[in-house]
Image: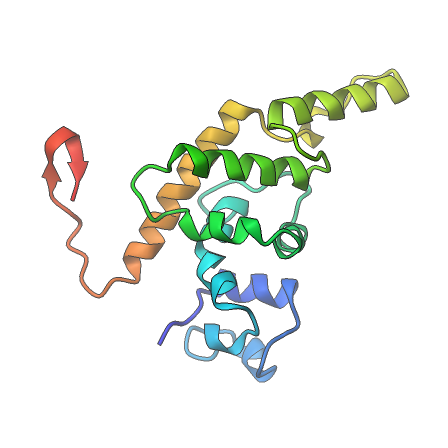
Length: 182
């Protein structure tokens, strides 16, 4: 039986009210709150690890002024990203396609459609600068492409460790060819 971590418990208390047993929220320990208590599709449940690793946690930064609720609403409105978050942490290194899809997700998160994050950064900066003739607050811009690539790699590593923690036997791996773990 799969139980949620404490931080995931808090996330879903904030994101959704579709919880089967409201009394479980009050205690919110690992034995009182089960993933099966949440009314989500199987794909959404399997995307939780990647979603949490990517959108911010204790080990990876969150997007400035973009809370979990806003990130989750975007995920619900664009189901194609559910598969993206399901694949985060499955492989040692994310594929190139897995790196492009979160880039589109971040652009949409910041309100720019159909552009890569560098173009989205420019559009947001240009829009703000043209309107006020002041230097825009750069903390409100999405991360640049290179920073986002590092963010994706970090999220992939974190999600991979979390997925490995669910395995019944984990010996830490053995070093084999090319300094990779097996």
